[in-house]
Length: 167
Image (cartoon, rainbow, N blue to C red; front, side, top):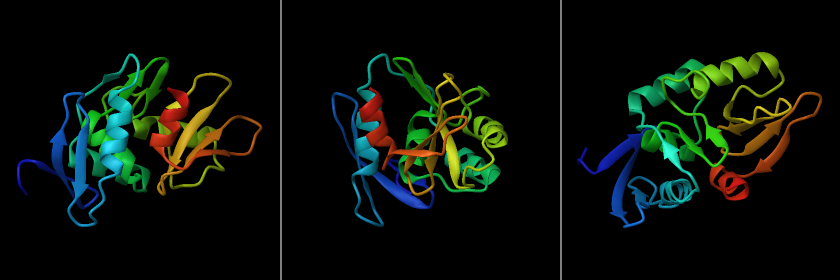
């Protein structure tokens, strides 16, 4: 694989352009897609008070998926390979990192005990730490909210859309 490529979930992502604003424009060699990476990275890097970790390796990403017995949505996998985890203006998104309160595996395992009806292909994206509200993403990419005493509520079709609503 060339030095400017990354492999996520078996897909080779080729970096094409990095703009002065830090937006990574990428294309997928196997599908020709250039939406997921550029949208999620552009959205995240432009957020107010943006902070991030260091990206997770493909091996760490795969290990997290195996620990949860699921596959991450492509945009989430690309986000964690790029940043590891992020925080911005009152929000902290889970990822692959050494901090248990932000580690997607630790948080998802903990929340599955509290929310046993949540489908097995959902993982925690954000714990609001307000009234037990938890934001999840399905392997298909949809964003859902759970709260004690309520049925899950679909919020968005993608993480990128969710970030647009909360930022």
